[in-house]
Length: 154
Length: 387
Image (cartoon, rainbow over all chains, first blue to last red; front, side, top):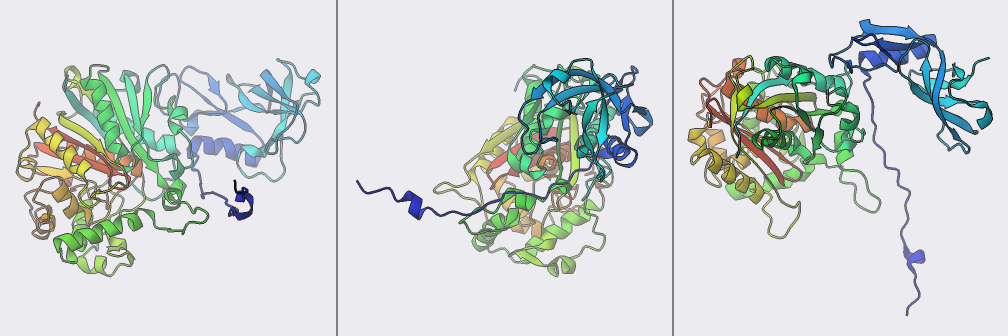
């Protein structure tokens, strides 16, 4: 049987498959990202039944009608952890380069939670119902990465 | 075919190059809200939604219908997606109609859309692969050889492709929803536009559009609910074939002609040119008009270009069988919605809702879509009277 020469003769080439995608956010998510970027604030949206949804949605899940920027309301930059999962080894594109918790955080004044990272130092420091506050990066660009992470509130 | 199915609501966006003011879902909702208003219905009245969208690489948003379900009012209700490349806008409508004719649902919404400004579709559809020549061709590069072969076989003169482009762009001036409104269009302007893929000039190609088109389809018992008389479905058909196979005729594909034959049989069409009042046919590059005239049996093989040449398909020349009154794909092309716009235009015409592009007294119309490498076909016939 002839020796396998596959390794010697195989052609190799670097190949990066990528396309130049862009996104229009629409007025409501646009305002959400703009408030974070310009003012370090969070805004949610009030539905026909009075619920405040944050991050905001374009369509009222209760009435199924379109919502508008007029329905948007400010919520807090602090809130409560409603559930969480500890990540003992951070992966390269995670928001933190050390162990942290992925958590659902219900901001003050909101009726729904948003997903983000909590830098608590250790798993033992995490608990459902704990209060956390947002921290932002310095050079904000108007996307979700403007939120650095959440940290336990003193 | 089961129960009767009627179109009672039609809505589309103004097709354009960039809808920066709305996100994908917002643009879809705009067309759906218009269709629901036309149908005198609300989101809560719907039993199901069927959505069509071309390959996800076009916007780089994978299975967007999953996150759109809530905005489409489908929490706890069925929403599903149809996927047949460029013909998807037509196939989506047909799949939706089967839910009605099969007796599964009574009131559904079908919608086809694409927001092409959010990427570059040519590169998304023809990526550079290592060790293979980079074609950088896109759809025009793929179809140009088919067109050259059509010209060789039929002996059609050069000006036919130019004439189709002028005709469709003039039709578009009558349609407020068309993307391209080229007021100055004339044969000289098209002839002087750059040659992109010989024999296809820039002026003979479709644009890339942001747009969405929706229709409300209902069972007979809800047919009178809309703001205008309903359009009745007289037949629907789909066919497909492989991109490459021995003996395949890419110029006059068998799946297209078989699809038309089966469709015509459902509606008793024996002479399409005479029996239809208009046809809205997927012509993304001008030369596809004569090619599809033949494939769809409006004339004998090799004769399609003569119909175009004599003005038979032109509203402005008073043709007997106007094709693409909306301005066609040459004037608006949100890929996943492009087939839906064709189907919707046929329905608008038989409902008498086509405004300045209305064919007087239109009673029976053909809507047509194709996709892939001329291999996926979807067609329907709608009429002002019950089938």
